[in-house]
Length: 346
Ligand code: PEP
Ligand code: MN
Image (cartoon, rainbow, N blue to C red; front, side, top):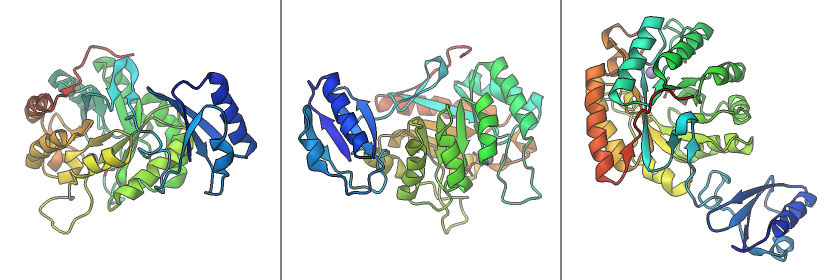
C-alpha cells in the first residue's frame, strides 16, 4: 500500500503518517518525489485499515498496489530509478552504460589487457567473474578470492568500475569489498538466502534473469533485494531457455519494454549469454539499445580463442569497437547517448 501526500504536505504531516503506520505495526518508507512525497507501507498483508490513513492531515490518496511485487512496481514509484555509481556514472538515466570484459578473470595479464582494451573502446565498467557458476563441475570454476585481487588491480590500472558475481551469501561481503556492483547470476536468481544477503549489502546489485524465469519471477526476485533495503538494483535480460539450438538462449528483447512498463528499475541487456555466438552479439546489442535498454553487458576477451570460459560468445577488442560505434549511433537516434569514460573513477 502507498500513502500519497499532497504536494504541499508539510514535513510534520509526513512524520504524522509515518507514526501512525508504525503504530499499526508496519514499516513506513517515505519516498520524496519530484511532485510529492509518497509513503510506502511495508509488511502489510492486505488487511491494513486504509481509512485510518486516508483521514490523516496531508494525505491525498491511498493506492493499493495490485501486483505481487510491491516496491519494485511502477505503481509504488512512478519515477524511474537511477542507480548512481562512483565517479558520476548512473544507470537508468538518459545515458547507456556499457559493461564489458571477459567471462572469467584468468590471469593478471589477461584481465589488465582486457580492461585497457574495453576502456579504450569506450566501456565504463569492467565485467569478469572470479567465482564462476559452471554447468559442469569439471569446467574452470574461476580463480575465486585471488581473482578478486586481480580485479582490484585492474580497477586501479584502468579506472573502470567493477561488476563481478557473488555465488553464495558468504561471497557477498568478499565481492562487495572489491566490486562497485554485485552480480547475481541467472542460476542464482531464485537463491533467496543470497538475495537477502545482497539486499543488505551497501553496493548496487545487478540481477540477471533466471534460465527460464518469467518477468514476474524476475521482478519478485528483485523485490527480495528492495525488501531488505537495497534500492540500487539493476535488472539484466540475458536470454531464456528456448527450443531452438541455433542460439544458446532465446534473447528476449521485449523484456526491456515490459520491465520498463511494470517497474521503475533500470534494465540492461546481455547479448553475449543471450545468443552464445560471437557473430550475433553485435546485431542483438544494437537491438537492445534500440529497445530502450539502460546498458549492455558484453563479453570481450583479448584472445577469445584462448578463453577459459565462453570464448565462442566473446568479442575480440576490434569487434567490440565496432559494437561501441554502432550502439552510439543507435543511442543518438533515440535521444540517448552512451556514457563515455572520464578517466580514473574513485
Ligand atoms: C556471466 O555473466 O558470465 C554469467 C555466468 O551469466 P549468466 O548468469 O547470465 O549465465
Ligand atoms: Mn560468461
